[in-house]
Every structure is written in structure tokens, then in C-alpha cells.
Amino acid sequence: MDSITTKQDIGHVRIAQEVVATIAGLAATEVEGVAAMSGGLGGGIAEMLGRKNLTRGVKVEVGEREAAIDMNIIVNFGSRIPEVAKRVQENVKRSIESMTGLTVVEVNVHIQGVNFPTPETKEDDRVR
Image 1 (cartoon, one colour):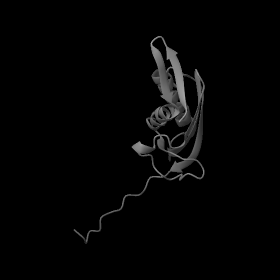
Image 2 (cartoon, rainbow, N blue to C red):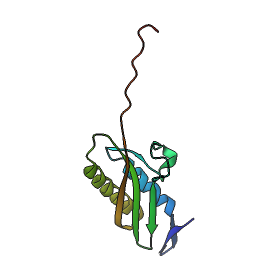
Image 3 (cartoon, rainbow, N blue to C red):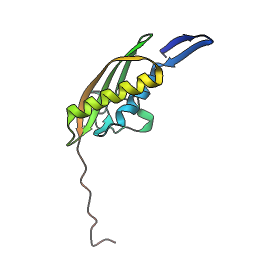
Image 4 (cartoon, rainbow, N blue to C red):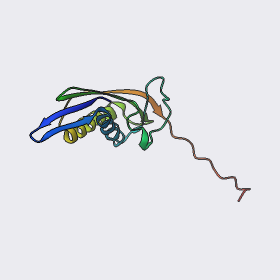
């Protein structure tokens, strides 16, 4: 497991890359219009995000002081994609920088699909 290590006066602080990816995934799903994270073209585009899959569709590259993030997301139908992508970039950058102290140099958002609402089924009046 890769990690980021910083030296403090009293010891080292080690942050696993998976932690940075989890922060990014959670920050992205907080944005209105994001339906789910996507594992990429071959990774189950229609699979909705569950709490255990926060790193799904997130690739993190970190150095000693900087990080670059690539994210694959699915947006809700009717959402303005450029606005959703911009809000994802801003929220991910702010969250990672405030929680880890790293400088985020880029957040690349890849829209992998659109989530269409499922029509609600009407109850049959004959069956009660």
C-alpha cells in the first residue's frame, strides 16, 4: 500500500493513498447531481455507490506535497454536466487540502454515464 509520509518534530505522519481516494470519493458524492462513482468503462458503469465503495472510480497520484486526482462519475439526468463537474472539482480540492495538508494540483472529472430515474410502479387496484 502506497502512502504519503511527512516528518514532524516529534515523528512521522503517514497517510495512505486509499485515505486520499476515500476523501475524494466522499467529497464527490456530496455534490448535488452526482448519482454515483463509476469504476471506468469496464468497471460496472451502472453500479450505484455504496459506503464501502467510496474509492471506486478514483485514481490518486501523490507526491510529498502535491496530489492529482482522476475521478469517474455518473451524473443524474437533467443535471448541467459542466456545473456538476466544476462543483465536484472544487469540493474534492477543498476536502483533500483541508484534511491532509496536500496541495491538489488537478482534479480531472470524467463523466462515464447518466443515471435516468426509474418510473415508479403503480399498485394494481385489484390486489390489496
